[in-house]
Length: 198
Image (spheres, rainbow, N blue to C red):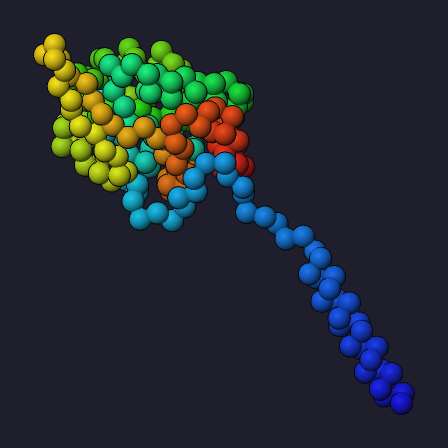
């Protein structure tokens, strides 16, 4: 009888410990508002020239969160809206803004020379960098990040560019982590960039 009581007491204690362990809150993974693409097999590398003439790869931005957006300077709405949202994010980050690098990759290297990018991109924020390269370099980078773009001729003899309109975000190790759909807004971008900066 005594042995049975001891066994019951031990069983009760073990059950209590298991229940207590089950009630202990485990640290949760970050809850992103954007699309989590961590571990994706694409978006691992690029090699382009910035608007100051310096060759750039992800290694240049190690330790900083990087946003990567593909567009063109003649874009009437999507591109300036996206860069404007990133300017708001920079302002809201305050002292942490130096730990974020915004990159604008042109899909129109024919018109978007380094000089054009240098006038256009930093107008949104002085730290923003425009990236360009040969048509082959740009096409290779777009393919690596699964970006569609295509020239569309206009009736007046000019042309515009159709292109994917989302933003990729890489962490401080240069790993692709998030995808932001166009129009998601600065608050969602800011929320997730802050998580990656922690």
